[in-house]
Amino acid sequence: MGAPSSSQLSVRVADEVWIATALLHREHPERKDFTITEIVDRARREQITQELRPGVQVHASQHCVANRPPNPGRYRMLIATGRATRRLFRPGDPYDPKREGAKTTPSPEEIPSRYHELLDWYQAEYVRGTDETPGRDPLLALRGLGRELWQNEDADEYVRRLREGWE
Image (cartoon, rainbow, N blue to C red):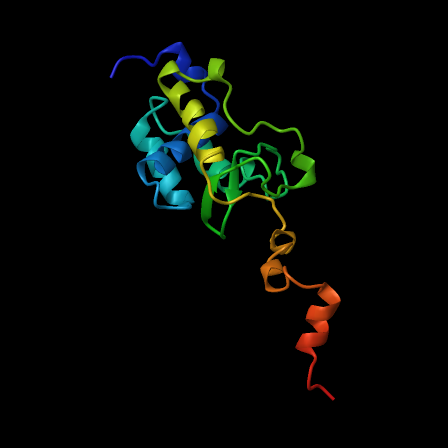
């Protein structure tokens, strides 16, 4: 291999972790998350930089993880779904308040152009294409469930009917 290009040298470790994770999501759409080891291995195979930097593992483990306290990195690029599993962050996901306003995706001008399509995929498919609404309260999501049971009668009448025969 020749000398790395200036774009390879300037890619932030956090952006490299995001790219590797996004590639895994696209390659395995049936999977919801990936182990830290899988993310590091994918970054190694992708060779965004000439050699895998030691910071990739700690960024995938801690610095990029939105729902972990910042230490010191405060990116919101990944979500911890388990002790050693991660997925890409989506708007609405829970995150440590100290990470408010932090970077969630790479800036196009800070990554090689061959990865710009990942940013489009992330917005069009990963964020908008999900059946889940991240961050939505599951109890509030139940609002209105079952209303068809008493839709044609008064709510009080429905309750009276349910209580018939009670002592």
